[in-house]
Length: 182
Image (cartoon, rainbow, N blue to C red; front, side, top):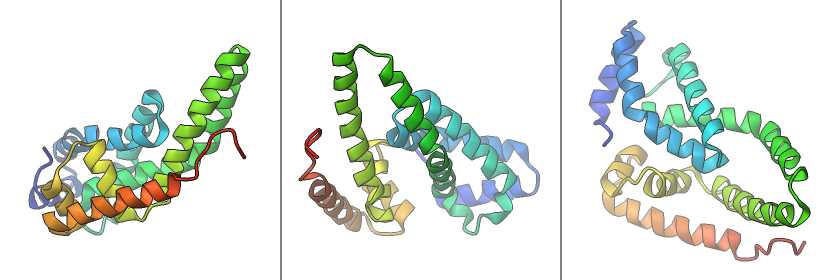
């Protein structure tokens, strides 16, 4: 369970003053959630782990730029998302190369599955940030209304409405998806 925002802000303050143990505590506290967000976006545990590590390294070296210490988790996730975006072309090229070596029928099945996964990822990526964060925290981090509300700065009741609207928006974006029929 994530720590409270004041405790997170206190750890960030200590880390900014050179306390490596405080930063290690932040990593321990949020690494699993950041990893969950990264794997949900790229689908590859190895890449997700690499990006998670790189996100924390970047966070450590740029901690002075964090404007709201209580939002450390969201900030690190944002760093990870930016790293994934930069690597997106590399990931796509690697998946195409791997698919080219598979037998024809297996390659077609893998491509259709990859197309569906990519469509869902893109639909989630196109959602407003609060919808995307709420969905990811709920489904991938297994967080509930109160924790999501703290992250988004809204009430627990508002979280339920955001999740409802996010699901509807996602369904709307995917309603015409039909792999292989362009």
